[in-house]
Length: 308
Image 1 (cartoon, rainbow, N blue to C red):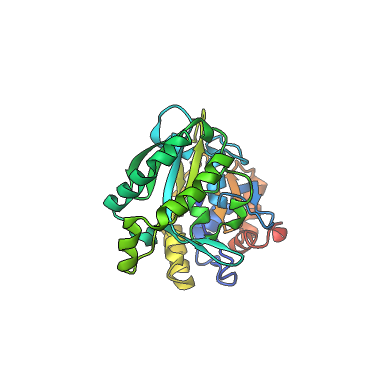
Image 2: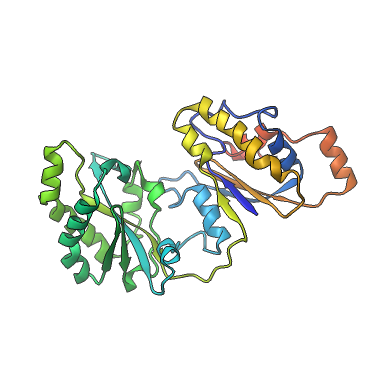
């Protein structure tokens, strides 16, 4: 089993990490594990296109860390290069282009279908065959999508997307198409009606999950839990309480077995993957004398240099 925990530590509240008494089963697990893999953003102006927990997921499925990450092909189970298109709203400033979370649009199915229908002639002209899948997910096919490595939708949602608009990840025809669609959508009747109601307009789209179907042998049980990110929306107290519940309900049963286990702890910038390994008697004795300190393992997600 490979268990992935996004936002196990957060740069937003670095001093609110759970202590040993909060997560006793995490203490037990880490005491029987060795650090196997470290992933971290290089803190450059162009961060990695995937969140750390998404990078762990991709690598676990046999996808290269540099991409492509063919999520659309995996979701459809069909052959050929594919991608997802998500209608969205960009807020353009002097030095930033912020893509608001698409769910804030509250885009109806009918609005989404009308916008896609209006865009179809331009999409087809650039060789994109696009089918409506849901209000915020349109399924695209094209040879252009075989080697495209764009940032994930989660990565750009609510973020300044300028670093990924200028990194050359989109082929020239798709960059031109984005510009053309901004002009087309500006005066579309759907947007006129939305403006009259005081709603956000749809003024662009984001292409993500592109690539060819990839041969993969995913782990027998790869599980990503969103418990901590969801609780974090309510603040550090709710997040810490979620950690306690996760420890008692999810991690506790894992301490009662010796089956193979990988545990990936992630922050906004870093992912550390631990693997349970057989231990000799002296290692077990040392664990009893010097139990693992979860604060150290979690703080290392915020300050990797502190990892010992």
